[in-house]
Image (cartoon, rainbow, N blue to C red):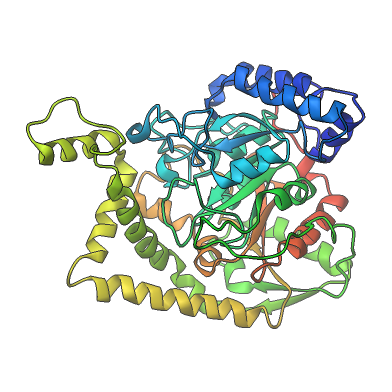
Length: 484
């Protein structure tokens, strides 16, 4: 398919000029999805629904009523509920569940005329860093069959990297957009917490869950982001802000910007080739006239323990609704309501959700609430304050996404090792900050290397400007895995 790796901007131009129809595009991507089923990136594909949406987009284009995104294909992480496709959160607990409504993010992108290709695999209830926890099988990394694609938005990242979709939705609770983007050589955008609505996102940790995008480039993310954010009166955490054009600053120079680099994050424990690739990106920004400023974020080192107390506590609360009584999986055999609930939860949840439910229930229990949960929330506030004070001195922060490249399947079988892989991503999530992850090299092991840019609240346009400047000057985001 010649359009497989074409940018959103170019697809939009071709659609508006009638060089290709939305139906032709949709069919082409559906064929690629079928051809690469072994990747296991998609959980639910319904060609008849996809083509119905494509036909509607073609009618709008023919009538001259279409917006710039009409007919552009997109796929959604299986955390977003949809009317037309099953919404399972990659869990047996919700197997076959059909939502009566669309998540706000899905509804907004559908209203923009985008065509849904299906639902994407992920870690169960978005819990994981390697997409090894899905109840429906792990997702492959197009760059290396032995490597994880990152999690929890691994299916989203793999779909873009393999050319199965030009842009996809994902969610980032503690790095679940940025890490998969880094591991698969694509661009991931996590907006400020509260900018995209959480209505219709199957909840993991409500004070952290943030919808975002993965695509081939920062420009693609900027083109679509404006259509997926906006105030939602049905979401109490939704920020009421005016509409914003996130492409407005893409072509502006970065001269005069101050980019902070937490030097302690660039030292011991960071792979040498990852460090060299990030240093090359920093040298580029320096040549472009930006000032590179050494900073320290001492509180951020507490991010992982704080995150796993807060996130697990919220997961314990959110997942308590899945009891086999009202909805969700119900065990076939039980003796009374207590055994029904126990067996239903035991059969419906995988190992990782069970682990986090247990941790969360423990830290919220009488006698431990003050010692763990309240203390974690206090430290979370200190981490956020540290970031805000730092952003008085710098316009953005550049840092690694991970200590290395994608790790092998099974390498982080120990839960603590898996949790520590979020070292560089969870601090920004705890503070609700926006972030962009983008490719900045290829390791000698053949796996992509990612760079992370973080900003103050509501500075998505600035981060996308910085990322676009790098991508105008380099071709790392245009490298494709062999065989795709």
